[in-house]
Length: 357
Image (cartoon, rainbow, N blue to C red; front, side):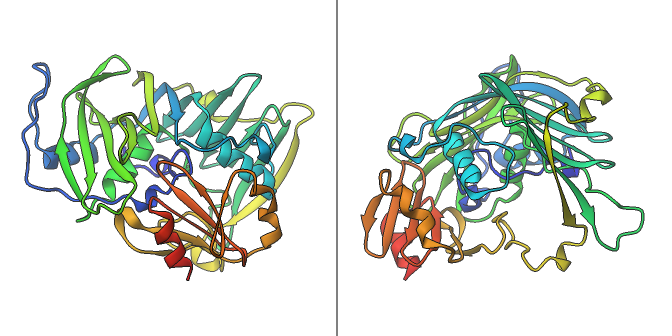
């Protein structure tokens, strides 16, 4: 699916920017009898050449990072608002809870994600004509983002960076380099379909990631899900996969959004030419003002200094270290420094402290 709708930031805000991989010696697969054997290189080519342009599916995302009780942070939902507390609540919810959802993709019309909450839903809808909508039924709020800039006949955002299990895996596999061993594992059944499993393992023992398994549809080459396992664990810390999938073209009405009555809409613009935006994030971070250090699986993302007082509410769920406080999990550590910076990565606390110095 070589369209702009397939790109997206990783599902649980865990720094998969730390993940990069390389093809090792081609290994033969112990594929089931109904799937032909493929080497790792052949599977990567299979994904890259997948011509799926339209599909819909239901998925489940789970997170089990071994985090402490985060209830002291407050907040019960994500909201579509832009304040820092809502963003923090969104990240914490994704890192500690499971979610069910649906995705609809049509390379010609747009893409839509629906996250189904207990008492409502959140939607991300993107089209070439109407830009990007982010809607939260529980908060009765929506954000509408359109493009601005000197781009003739292009008044809105192009089709969308909308999250799907496929887009996460596609971006991951497209970033492969020499920091990872790639092998073919056993076959599996995902969403009722026979799938290959591609196993990505870091060469660097300093990473907290043990492996990432990507499930690839044996007929179309479309990734059907992935699971990230932390070092020393036997079960995934994060997983997302389709439970059902349909390769017919979704109804075009699904990509049209009109805010319901009573919903507060915030209108925003995004520069059509990213080079005109002084806050353009460093490639791979997806975060304005962010910088990175290290490489591959041990990449550390650093956000610039802000208001250190904003971290005061974290005392109940973090541990004091020299120069700040740490939120620790099985897969990722986050350092909040006394001078207001935030550093995160799939690395040890010592590595974060060294980077902060």
